[in-house]
Amino acid sequence: MGHTNDPATIRRLLTDRGARWAVVGLTPNPRRAAVGVSRFLRDELGMEIIPVNLGAQEVHGETGYRTLADVPGTIDVVDCFVNSHKVGAIVDQAIEVGARAVWLQLGVIDELAAERAAAAGLDVVMDTCPVIEVRATPSLRGD
Image 1 (cartoon, rainbow, N blue to C red):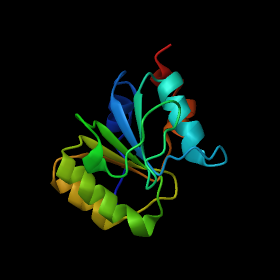
Image 2: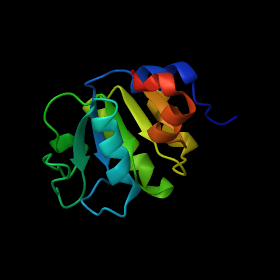
Image 3: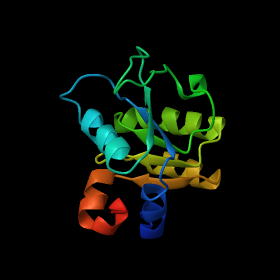
């Protein structure tokens, strides 16, 4: 049986104001969904955004890092904007750096990676988007 998202986990992750979200695949390209979603996380939900991309490019005025291991300090959530066939390696890095949770964006599905993360004690959300979840449950916004 596949992974099922837990509504309580989604609520907890999206209402933890000030949490540090490392957004893997976030680049300055305004046509990429990661730009809008990360802006929403920062501006609407009060999250700290950490761009993680191969070019270590700055996004939203925040320093970018090449890998999760390069990010200083604690990472609360690793938000994955990468192809499903690449996300397993990112989940393994999230486990290695001690992240609390992994969030695999809409369309990003890897059941084995989700199992590894859960077995390591991480919260797992898969195949959905924070913006969609907040629009479906406005109380998550915390207004």
